[in-house]
Length: 481
Image 1: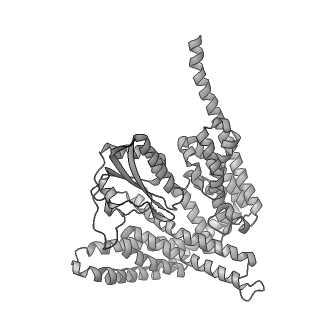
Image 2: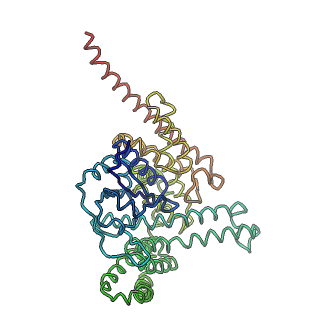
Image 3: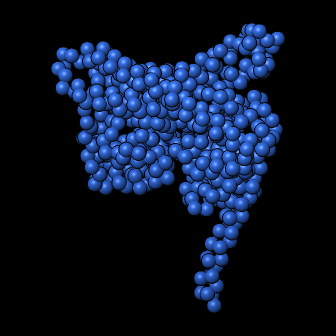
């Protein structure tokens, strides 16, 4: 029975809101059950905030655990003992986080400033390192941008079923319905950079940053500065508006409406708009040069590119290194229509769960019953482009398992580039197979990477199993002697 005298609340959230969010939730609940305490977990996933914590629950809680790489509404936790960690630690070190919360030794959280009327203020500083703040802001932009990317990419790809030029009224392939789908996808794609930029700024300085960031992102998109321009505009808008909020903090309460509705949007849009207008062309030139260099690797040396993309994607399985590869692929797809690079990125993230799935099937006796069941689920996770299914296995022995996953992903990505596979959508896994150029070769690349890694990992588990059996038998033989 849980000890009702001990009650904790937690918030989990990862940039994409797909797997880590709910894996951290499950890990924290399991840790609480083992410790005999009660816990309530709020998740900030792809569908938004679910199981939101109530004010009564927060007031009753002995401590708060934040395991999130996204901006969290922090004003509500003022005066509570707080444990802060990445969502990855929530998955891998849930017991440690709960132990810290139970110890009663964590510092009491004091929220700086106050939220606007009717609006909860998001976490923007409060003791975190600058690097982590920058990462969370960037990932906040990525997570909110992704739905626009996925919807736009898939709709554009679907329109090609009627012909690659079915959207062009001057071409014989023109089909009005296909053109409508194409235009919808293009419109969704056009919102990517503004939304990305706006939410970077929002995570730093809330709604004032959002307005300036959105306009900065529109300018970046219009002048061809792309994601690089979006990143610069987002952070510039966020920190500039944070400074403006600071210097206007002593405005009389009677002027709050004037400040929030008129002054802040006007100053933010004017300053960031002028900066991006004058810097846009220079940033665009740098951005295009970077894109051309990365795209050139596809044909010049697919082996090197495959190894780089494969290692990045499998290194932290949905973490910041993996996201860097994914955002690069998304950027090339959005700005240049480069579906070749995206194919390697998607392959490299689909291989790790397939490695686990093959290993648990081919070397079944060397895995526990719970691992066998999780291995079968990884077939589905691989097919749907969710790399995080491999995390529980990698977390148990990272120094050996992660290199196997990196090798496997590198094989899959390299073969994908070698076969010139083109994936025109930024998400979906095998769901988008009908849209893929050289689809069967793509599947072969994924299976090859997964099978090689599965056999290597399986033999490693066999060796480990036999070694443990031998060490257990040795003391028994000695005692009989």
